[in-house]
Amino acid sequence: MLQRTLAKSIGVTGVGLHSGERVALTLHPAPENSGISFLRTDLDGEMGEQIKLTPYLINDTRLSSTIVTDKGVRVGTIEHIMSALSAYGIDNALIELNAPEIPIMDGSSLPFIYLLQDAGVVDQKAQKRFLKILKPVEIKEAGKWVRFTPYDGFKVTLTIEFDHPVFNRSSPTFEIDFAGKSYIDEIARARTFGFMHEVEMMRAHNLGLGGNLNNAIVIDDTDILNPEGLRYPDEFVRHKILDAIGDLYIVGHPLIGAFEGYKSGHAINNALLRAVLADETAYEWVEFADNENLPAAFHELNLKKCG
Image (cartoon, rainbow, N blue to C red):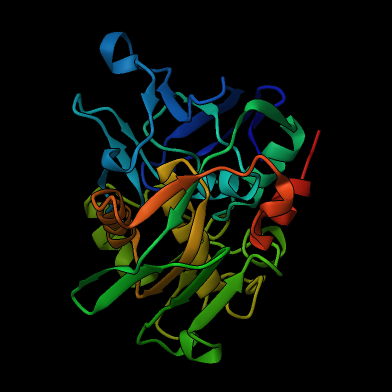
């Protein structure tokens, strides 16, 4: 299977969920083997240099996955766009923005899926590299855990736990094996969510300044406030899977393995990636020159061409 990039550049404007700032975002094609990079066009000199994404740049995980470079350059809330890039197997792209945060759009990854469909996806000459999990790797902390286990494909299983009546209406656990299920159908529309009682605390820390009922599910003491209701009966746990997929794709390559989590979040997801990369016996890089040898989870990805 070959590496992929965009067929053309494409842009969109929106608002940062936490910063509240207006953001102009443009996605560009990028050369093979260049990976996913970010560029803050509002900054000059060294601060305005291109940033190649790695798990080691995620240095702020308060309610999102945020790049913070050693120069203090920030690119916040990257998990939704990374989740969409994962769905289309984009290996190489340059993401330009003129603010410190990716726009939240409608709170899901679906607007970014539409952007990729509009731009088109093209194969490049170099082989796509997959990160294959070879042995179990687990992180536990403060009543939550995440783990990778070997699996011939890509499967995600998550469980959430919130002491609130809204969450008692659906199963707290969702599992999706991409050998038989579609990311776009099952995951992409799930929106981020938050509680009214957290708003004051968040805004005291300059977070959540752009949040509203158009880009998040908002929950009060008894119910959700969004008049249109939920997009999936179990939208909350599906959104956590959307986030996890984006967090894991920060490694820059598709994963062959099973990911499981209980009360997972951005910090612990990133810690798991770092733990895998720190143990050379836990993974290997693999390529598939013959697409017939691809694990079934990536068959749809191989067929999914747009543009």
